[in-house]
Length: 124
Length: 124
Image (cartoon, rainbow over all chains, first blue to last red; front, side, top):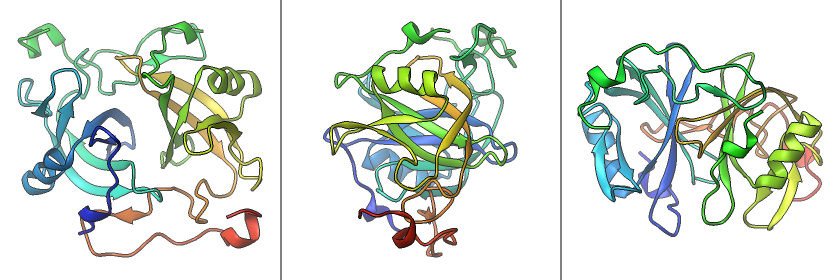
């Protein structure tokens, strides 16, 4: 375990890329502080720090769409995490499997929704 | 093209996850400002902004390990990019295909080096 190696930014955060292990799909980017990283390692499911709400949150706590951690990596600068997970349901609050459903380099539309977000999430 | 949709942070930057299209391997995370994003879209190869050197840099300019852009996505918050590329050689300056070669959750060692970084990079 090399948790001491991780370098946090001036806000005490490190970006975490979440990738679905089975499909290789990049699901989302979220931020962790030291406490959420510790909770993730202890619980085996992802915990993040919300910069807007200034609180820890467990992914899937409301929706049931938890991310079970399979493998965790950090990069050569030790300032970014890569977390390979088993994604239950959809990673995105918009109902798509991945949060990256919008093409930047074309006029094409969005990815198909796996679930109806209004049915899964109580809060907007 | 939805380049106007992208939301930059207080430093004018947006994190960009780079993924090898063929293998699904997450290669690196780097940062773009508006100019490097424009150059990436124009040139079809990745350009980033170095936070430490405070300058634009083209990935592979020194090493030859350029990243040819295949597809670009942005996430539901429009504050993170996902760039699928064709990676020439190794993405990491340490000689590994991916910068994410260190396991956080085990005592196992690093990934195999594809190239000798001392032979590829002139500068440290």
